[in-house]
Image 1 (tube, rainbow, N blue to C red):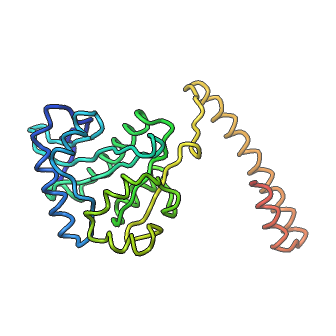
Image 2 (cartoon, rainbow, N blue to C red; image 1 turned 90 degrees about the horizontal axis):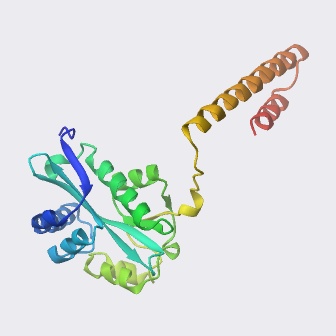
Length: 235
């Protein structure tokens, strides 16, 4: 469905009536997929809305479209964007990605130094996470907060998780570490200036490479030496 008229924003008090709709769809979606997710109550979802730790998607007419919320663990050193759910009517429209981008942005604003992680069985979610900068990791790199792992008790795969000493399960673990994504501040003028310098630099390198390849061809040089020079040239 076209999502141009969908509003995606931080949830507010006025969104509390959607809490039961959201949790009902979470449960129905888990049953349909045959996979487990940590079950959440309407009260829990409502609490996330009141704390400003949730993102909701609605049509301009007020129809519920999607939802996701933030959980913090390990004294706020780890953050999870959990409970991503989209109404069946709006699936495969790109709205899930927009919700994930919004909740990721909200997480970075509220917890700028926290590692953001997720556990998922969904390939689409894995792709979205990857685009945001997450990387696959082992379970040992996630939080060791017992409260987090206790939330898995309502999952149908909990016995598998415990049988493997919480080292792996059916879900794939993915992590975004802000320490690996340092972004220096740069003004528009700086960008333009640096871009022009980079363009001149690349043109010079390309010109030198073409001259070298022409000389190599005339001299009958071996292809391996040309390739070796090519990789050194670009490094």
